[in-house]
Structure formats: structure tokens, C-alpha cells
Length: 97
Image (cartoon, rainbow, N blue to C red; front, side, top):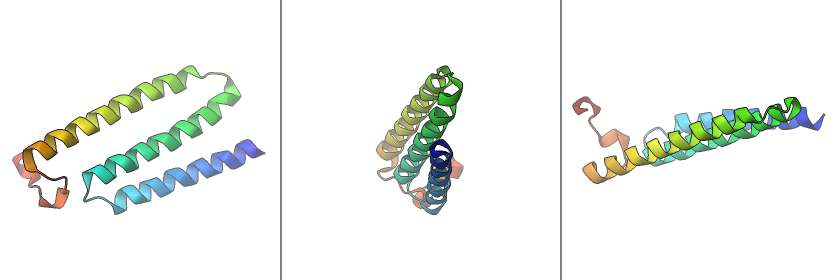
């Protein structure tokens, strides 16, 4: 019974973090933080579901994917800040890219 309650809690966490991701669309750093929170809640949901099946190798594959995604996002943020001086998406003209 508690496993199902945890699953519902993780799904609510994912939905709330997606709403924050949509609400904070103009700051890249806040978008990256919301994406990491989505990935963290998906990791907890996945580990909760895989614990019942005894197949935790999928969680390791997921962790590798999450780390690569976060490193790519932070490197793009650093390149953006060094070239433009801020991380505000509204001030950027993305047609130049």
C-alpha cells in the first residue's frame, strides 16, 4: 500500500516540476534546475518501480543519461553567459543561431 502512495507522490512531484518548468521559461538557469528536479523525481519513481522487479540495471542507465543531460545543459549555460553576459532568454535573439 505504501509503495502505491509513494508512486502517486512521485507523479505529483513530476507534474509540479513540469508546471514550474513552463512557468519559469525566461530564465535558463531556473529551467535547468526544474529539469533536474524532473529527472530526480523520475529517478525516485523508476527506482520505486524497479525495486519490485529486481532489475536495478535500468536505474544505472537512467543515471548515466541524467548526468550527460545535466553536463550538456550547464556547458551550454556557461557558453551562453560568456558570450552574452546574462541568462535571460527574452533578451536573446535566437534567430542568429
